[in-house]
Length: 187
Image (cartoon, rainbow, N blue to C red; front, side):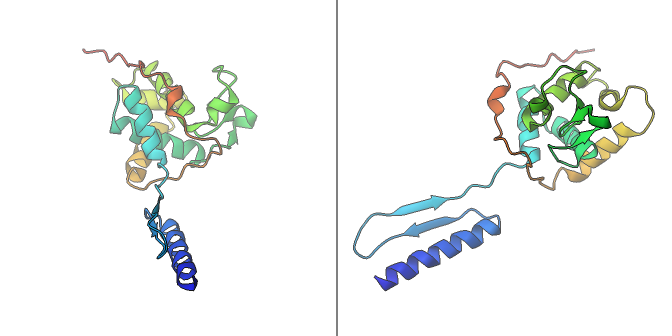
């Protein structure tokens, strides 16, 4: 009885240490009096980059798109969903002027929804044909303020450094229709 209690506490401590260290934990608890086996698997949450890549892929793009969005997100909010900017006019990860663009505040603060909206906005400004121009237009077309270059640099710098998702709401990729396909003009 005492050894079973010790084994359970040791397994719990191991799971806690593995969780804190960010490693998958597998706890196998067995009792001398039973053959039941309980196993526990802790899976790491997706990173911001994982989610952005999934959104880009649902829109017909790949890693370059996700890297670009990572850089934009970093400039706009430092990866915070609850940022309010431009005197209350811009919200969320990508600092979207939600009233002007007629999207909900909840969408602006949601990583999946705001990333999907940002891709659509960039597409309306010649993405992926003119990446720098499309990225710059998120901040202000033809502003000449270096926004696009900085976003692309930050995306490249941060791509291999997993960012933690900060929003309270669960990540829901199902809000992007599977039939979303981006038409890429072939010139």
